[in-house]
Amino acid sequence: MAQPLAPNQVAARLDRLPVCRFHYRFLALIALGAWFDYYDNFVAGTLAVVLPAAGVLPKARPEEWFSLLGLFMAALPLGMFVGSIFLGLASDYLGRRFGFIAMLLLYSLATLVGGVGYYPLAALAGTGAALTLLLVTRFLAGAGIGAENVIIDAYVSEVVPRQIRGRGVALTHAVAFTALPVAALLGRLLTPQDRPDRWWLLLVVGSLGALWAWYFRRRLPESPRWSATAGRHDEAEATLAQIEAAVERETGPLPPAKIAKRLQPPPRTPFRQ
Image (cartoon, rainbow, N blue to C red; front, side, top):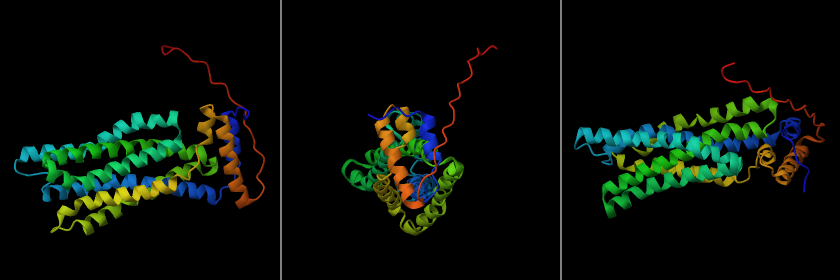
């Protein structure tokens, strides 16, 4: 069994590493998954326009139509709110890597089921059941996206060296925001005015792309800082050794780690003082 690793020891060994292709590959994989999360957020605006035209949100009664449209638009952000609180916290107990992969898979499957399953279910059980499926899957997709957004910053901050930590987080989100023009362009190409019934293709694009990203993100390492904090010292040591070996192959011998002294937290003072 490995000796217990203190958080400052893990930080010192990670921060001494020269920035190389390993770190940029890591950031690219994170950004790839985040891109599809952002894509689903942005494509919701297009869906709000084409779904009524496709008859998914019927306009027979204006008050009913506005209620259904409001439910559809609220399902994703409501799921994000719930996912960011509950599923995001789950990564503190189950691991950053597991949380990343599981939430991306949740988003992918929910989006795929909502897009592909709407018309078959409408033919079998009616539009009411199909619309319920769409709303539920949008909520579940939002839960996965919300948790992903919470985990991204923690995961990047715990793995990359401090000299690029802030830039790494910013770069991840900057790349993800390029999903905005792509979502708008795909909305124009896949759902022209004479074919609004092809709206489900917009969801399939996001789900299949996210599944592809999920496949590559299986190669991501677990956060050694999380492993050490969770008491998994053997796992933390093994992951650190793998990261150090990968960096050393690219950059040569590594500099020594400079372990900072652990500062004692200040004593707590009562609120009234």
